[in-house]
Image 1 (cartoon, rainbow, N blue to C red):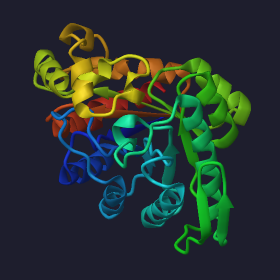
Image 2 (tube, rainbow, N blue to C red):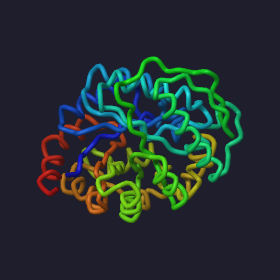
Image 3 (tube, one colour):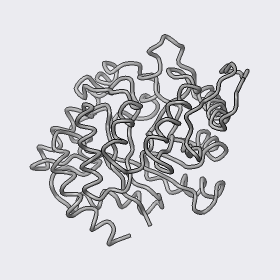
Length: 321
């Protein structure tokens, strides 16, 4: 049966709002949480970027839902040894079986901030594969020294560990990334209703291998008001192709987003208070076979959105699946 989760957008909401959303999501009956890991928001209008590991620690104190990072890039901005420690502590705080480390190759938007050169896509995949190897070795609890092509670790040991290492899921777009995910990941993450990718991953990892997808909606008093609020904050959602991986600043995303019209933006997703529209937005992901589907709200009306999902949307989804 499909699980339905809520996506905490660290790019848009302040720390206290994210904590409030996590609490409300549990009360509404969501099954799990995603949380983004960003240094910058996509646009200045979004206006936030709290540190994900601090947020997970706080959420662990107010909410019992499982949490997946969607996604952490353990390659450039943050060394994989540090990610291994942060993820291990998060797993302990959340409780056994309630933390998943979602990883991906990241975006220049977040990863260039220390002045490192942003690698090409194949190099990023190579770095991610080595990073995951380092993380898994450190989670074994032994003293680790590693001399790899991209990373060095010198007699490092993580002392605070969960009883069972958390699973590692990988975000993958395109065949090369999916091939790496099939080799190194316990689960598959995407934001596209890609049934073929689900089938490929399960062919490699088993018919019950976990697959997660996420998308965004905007609740509001009316459809037009919801579109206006979402378009003001998230026009970057319409930026195509690899631009999202290579543009280095919110200002660049704002410039690229000038090409995204309000009409084109409104063609994708559910906007406003129509419960049926929100239910139908899930159909492509459920039909594609994802085991978990996560939804994020765009705009200020998240409290009303979560209440409506609890009373109407989630019960209808569960009755269908």
